[in-house]
Picture 1 (tube, rainbow, N blue to C red):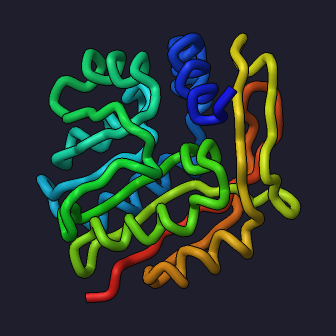
Picture 2 (tube, rainbow, N blue to C red):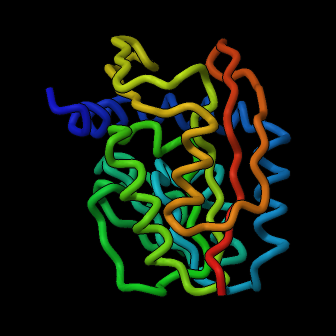
Length: 210
């Protein structure tokens, strides 16, 4: 099966179970980065959330302060998000293929989502983020930090569904973000438990030059 269709179908099937775990397992690191992002943005500014899932807990929190557009490849997840966060706008689309006019957003976020995109498309996605951001706008995301990365990884029982991941290591991720045209403000590796596993993520905050 096409890996992107596998991701869409997987989250359609197990979105409720995944979302319940995400709400329960929200980490202090996640909270700290959301607070840090909010400190840099004015209330009411435009924000694009890539891989928004069912909208909770992250998109809901962002929509309290910002004009949020969420994008997710799973029709089931965007349907859930519209119910969970009625004050935001949601689009069902591949985050690597969706397009918006240049300078559309003051911020772009991508939490635990880019890892579901084939890694050969990551650099072009970061270039799109730069194009969509207004000068001085910021990007915040959680990217893979494990080992040397994997071109493709599959699991047959991720919350009861099949799932696909693809990623680079932390150094390559930072290099791509910078080469795409963003200035890295913070790049920290944080470890936490999720779904009975210990995971390490690279949290990046970066800005588009004015």
